[in-house]
Length: 246
Image (cartoon, rainbow, N blue to C red; front, side):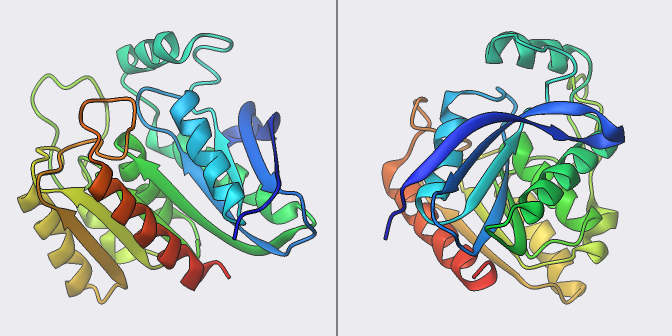
């Protein structure tokens, strides 16, 4: 089933009361609908991320993607904004959590919301989806090949972040993880380490790793795209959200 949708650029209240840009896509019916906060990848608030946001609306969810780079590069192209933020060490974790919390509150305040919210993120957004899920009360979270959840950053890496191994105990909701076996960040060993920690803490999780897929296998605009893995991954996401956001 697909839905008629409306998509628009709006302003929401993010971390510290800042007004930030966001992209909202939602079904046109009365609902009630579950909500999805889409956390864009490191290349930024770009066309492919907006397409993903609209896809969730088409599947019957209120989908909202905050522009995490609004403060550093308002009005800049996604490439320029991403370069600016990367040079400054990336999005601070505390601010990310505040922006996601603001997006979740915006969703649940809409009259068509059923009050349930999940996060999903790709690449850096995968780690940030996990970060949100250990920092906020959510109904579900999806980590698509998020690097540096458990592994330390390589020497000289530009981002100012740290692993989240010590936060696994705080996971507030079921977690879906989708990974490629040819990825190095996270590597299969990193994925296994995260799975071990989740099991030790008795958390609800579901992991799927795809052979012959590396990093960014969902991204249709890159040579890394793997159609079979992406199609199956989308099916897994649909089933997961269907269980926890209905």
